[in-house]
Image (cartoon, rainbow, N blue to C red; front, side, top):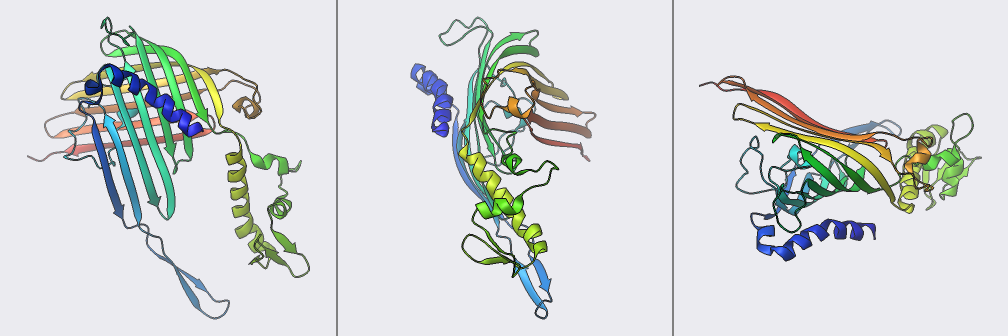
Length: 356
């Protein structure tokens, strides 16, 4: 139900613009699909001498990604010209910016089905952003208005949320703009720890009782431990605690979190966008700060896990490059995000030296 709601909210602005001018809405957009793959980490040999020398080889299946999507995003001056074909591996930090290169509508919808180092993920990144032209005189064009709807699911970073923002945007100069507005986010109840109810006053955990509740059994006389299907999974306390219990706890936490409803977060947002470009020097920077959040009194609101206090969420991005001489150039690019008790970031920096 939540995913259906997210897709509807994301697509409504697109459908509205499409009804006004279908050809213009999809002009220059690209539909793409691709399959990428390669060798994963090397096989690992595990040796055992319990019943004589035994060798077991742990093999990791190959990595792959299946990508498909549609995009309409204008390139900034510093971005390299697009490849002949989009293959889904393109990563542009500028996608995270509040405002794009052009005024008007831009969008991207991308799905990635991945297997990385033996683990499978479903990654998704969808967004629609719109910034009005000042005094453009057209319907759906409000002076100083910007809008962005985004859904991000990153399985490797363990982050998933939907964000919708409406902002009043003021251009101080042609390069710099500031904005203020409201943000609505839908996400799992970050901060909630299902293991809290199993913790003792000294901070330790009733892990064996928890495992028994989950269907495991313990034969204290024989020193054997059984999983819910009746199979022996450990014959010593050391193996039980070091091997079995970590998996039991991880599965329990995941199941409990999946049972809870997604949480709405309503926040005040302040932000800026700065873009300057010449052939030899460019800076593109943006930032967003959410200093105030509405407390709806929900049982699993993040306020309950933050001792009832306000907190600061923020995101920022920087793309910087300069050609120091005909031979030498350098660049720094990256994004940083801190939402609730989650942080994730990407960056790259380097130099180029051309020998003529």
